[in-house]
Image (cartoon, rainbow, N blue to C red; front, side, top):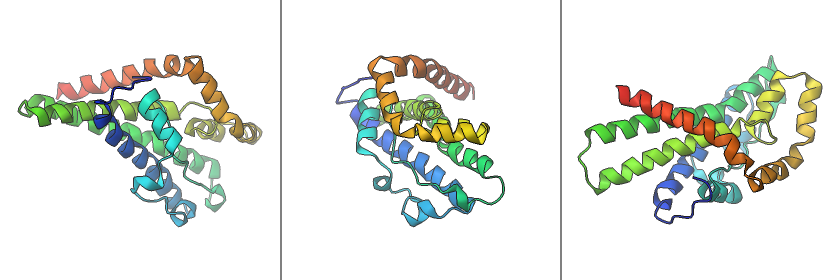
Length: 211
């Protein structure tokens, strides 16, 4: 899955990535807006238009390296009423949770087509598409809960920790890309991601094929 330059694969992967990233960021924006933060909406990010969400480098990495990111949705927790840390936790969980829902939908579609559709070229395309769609969404869900700034996992962890720890996490956010780059160069990203990714993909396929 990682460092895959198969051109034929791109006809399945590119649309799957666009959909997965778009809904991921839309979920962040929608939940933040529901809690009273209009920042993402005012900046045109509460939309399903993928051009508003795709980051060129993050998208290319997801296509060719198996992991990546979109442009982070701006969130201002000072708009939140009540428990801001809990609401920030829910906003941060929104993206990975959306990817899991998309992965479930992908697994269901894959199972339905595999079991009931006539075997032809169109069927083959959609089988491949939904399999990659399932994989990509699971990768995004798992990758984004890593507790490394600026990934969602760092904000999820910060919301569960005392304020001083949260401030420390935010203070190292500018080094996040370098940390991720080191993980990739030493092959640690694949070692960290692939066991839970493979487990979740196989689990979802097994569950959906039962019905």
